[in-house]
Image (cartoon, rainbow, N blue to C red):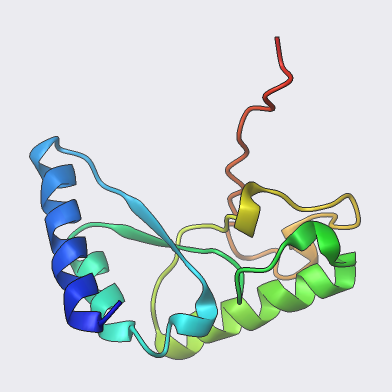
Length: 123
């Protein structure tokens, strides 16, 4: 999608959210942050949040714990380098594996939020 088209669609989406007095958290793969910094700044300035969605959209269940931490380190670095604030982390495909302990290994001073979803097997 062209950046101008993406910007128009995001503006429409944020205006819909605001009409309901809501804000959204837009999850972004950090590899794209440098390319779309201006668009992301506009989202943030409109009252929306940005969340980290990995460095790339890779399935964390296929990675070791150290590889998962490496992905998060690269993602965090990309956001820091762009000076964009972020609110939490959501792994791609809504999952990670048991090799991943906690984000405290990465940086205990940051607020890492994991938005779990309900297991479909829960009665």
